[in-house]
Amino acid sequence: QVQLVESGGGLVQPGGSLRLSCAASGSFFSINSMGWYRQAPGRERELVARITSRQGTNYADAVKGRFTISRDNAKNTVYLQMNSLKPEDTAVYYCNTVSVTRAGVGVTDWGKGTLVTVSS
Image (cartoon, rainbow, N blue to C red):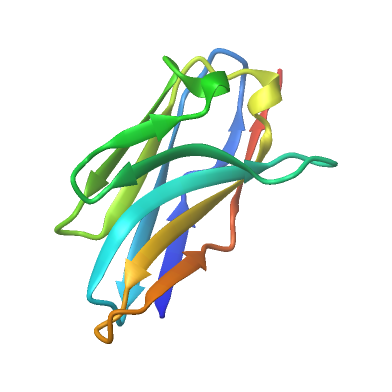
């Protein structure tokens, strides 16, 4: 099982920036992909961005050009740099990993979430 610890959320004014971090630890053979999802009040959880072990990325249309996902494989850590933040970016952001155990089993894990509030 993978343990995920998120950090970096908080309150920021519109147009501001935040950087989220998520460090993975535990027993796994490899982490295939790492990503960020978000859930705003009254809405379903949605993909924000995802990055593979080979640094391939994909983004939600709503954040393209403003958010950048990156990954440090040596540290098993994923980052989300969020620029030009808008009030509609307000949500709880969840880290997600898809890993493979030493037995070859695929596992999906979630962090507890970190709140991002964009407001003046």
